[in-house]
Length: 301
Length: 268
Image 1 (cartoon, rainbow over the protein chains, first blue to last red):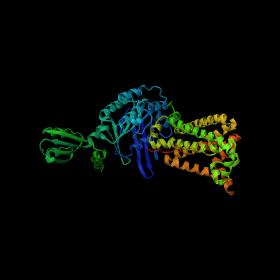
Image 2 (image 1 turned 30 degrees about the vertical axis):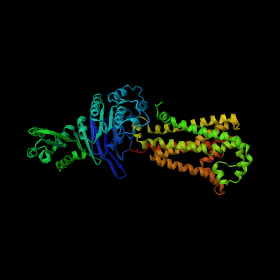
Image 3 (image 1 turned 90 degrees about the horizontal axis):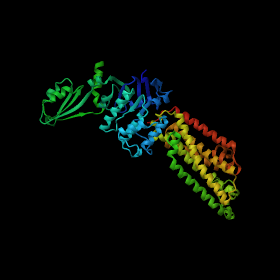
Image 4 (image 1 turned 60 degrees about the horizontal axis):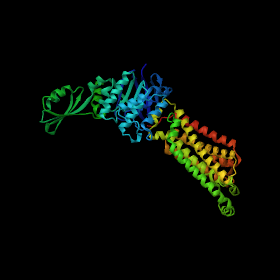
């Protein structure tokens, strides 16, 4: 049985497409990245899985339960991390945890407290005094505290600093090792790349790709900028198969490259010169995948 | 304290309900304190009131001028025919609009709905909390009036006191559950408050003004204020039929709220 399955899942808001005809199957124990630029339909899909909104057509199952008719049972076994970080501002972190634990019939808060301690979150403060990073941590604690079988997370590391992102990724891998399935959305490729097994890419409400991370990595185009202490020729770089675009700047002291797949060749070529800095632009997904989409199109036809 | 949607709402309103209770108690105390003065200056006030237009008296909750000079009639006109139900209704509409529409506007509804609690139960527990909070106000008011009766002899029976307070809660629950429904249906707090307030004001004036026009008088009965105010429960005790009507509409609106909320897409 799939942990999450959608069949022709479609949601229209009036005439605007949220998500169209989505067929997905996420295996138990998988970390599944749901990737796309903002407004592509990621949150819509997550909100359909959580039964906050109802499909126009099609259906979805979580843990074999229908999202429309068995949502309470699904919610019992799922941890949810919202994309919006609005929580009851007047409560303390501890009160919020106690409230949600009570609604889940979860008498033991020790796991929640351990999670908070690990993230360095002070639960005694009121939520309105939290930074957005701390609010995100609190949301993560409530998401994981009942050891859910499935984690559904909308942009989970949005507000976390890099150090906490590492801690969060470690937590995700532990949850997976304990048997949990993870479904997380993101608009940042490297974030998903780091932890996911498989990635779906959505754009304008449509699924454009469904790949393993390795396959994706081989195709993804990223922009990097190399800075040198002296002008260098662009030619050796332009010759590399992985380099799709190249432009020189600063009198030849800097090169901006669009590279498909591995950076290996580029780094080895650059090593012949004195490299001062390498800037790898995560960019936003729209930019990073532009070439990828184009390649898909030409492959097909 | 925070172990259900019901108790969470009581916890959130712990300060507001104290504030409202103090306000209601103060209003009752002022009214009681003025009773001896009103009683002693009956003749002067009588001639003053005779000069008032009938419509104004109706809206002020004075249907018959003579009754104003009995202690029960005075308390009724000062409290139960206007200020008390209106204040309770204001409180109830705020609670009703805040229930689901408020959480939706604040963006907290997603996390609440992600818990294993059916949507129906969220709506009904919030309604139960509204009833409890109104009950607190009613208990405070009853105690103040009971104490007032001991000090300045207000002459109402215990049954009358109970009937008036229960009725005030029932009429507030009617408008509160109406707001709950509009909020659950539209998800828009501002719109909900506006619609519920407009309906309340219309019904209040319908009760006060329709009887002044002979051809319109039969329509006074459409107003829930008529169901509560007209039987004069403080003097006459429980008007069971009319209270059943108030309760019936609350049940209807609560059912509509549950039904509307169950089938709706909630906003981000």
